[in-house]
Image 1: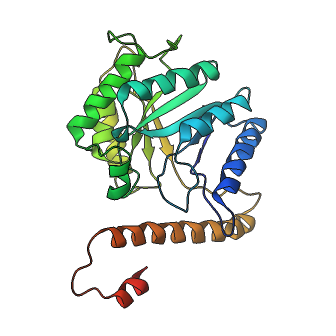
Image 2: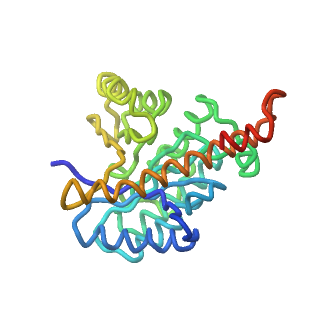
Length: 269
């Protein structure tokens, strides 16, 4: 049976504020539980005005407190910024708050511009460093380390997921026997290739004996095609504006080449 999950990036629409976006996410999670969704995941973005959540663990704790049955997750925790032990401790506490219904995703991207990444801790994001941090987080949570994340989870086998759309996340999930949540809305081109690689190279682990795949897609749901198309237009506009905002931050971060004038930059952005 296919399970449906909402992946909420806490978007800031139109004239709304980031506070409005956070409150809407909490209300949406409660409604998702009412109508039968299996899980509700929130995401992490830093210093991006189009999105309202930079601390998804805090938002997830609030949602857990205001729901009863639906699984709640963070997809994913951007581990390059943080201490593995602290990440594991946050996960263990959220799992305790939610009585075992917290899902955590390991995210391997910075989720921010380089200057913001530096302010968050200045960590490197090499594949080797990300692999090491992933190993340590799992070891702290699964009694495979002399140190333990407290409170110690009663069970570990239902809430660890590798999130991503790049080769590093796919390869790590396969080699270490972990579920994969593939961000198809970010990188649809290589989706089939990535999932085929994951399934064919999956190594059963102590935690998971077979591959498990989730796909994250953009979707508009309505009673008819006409209504769906009507709802899709503002969503497409938002995604376009959000992408332009990210592009603008990229252009403003890197030193402009001599041939790029301020007028040209305004036209591009």
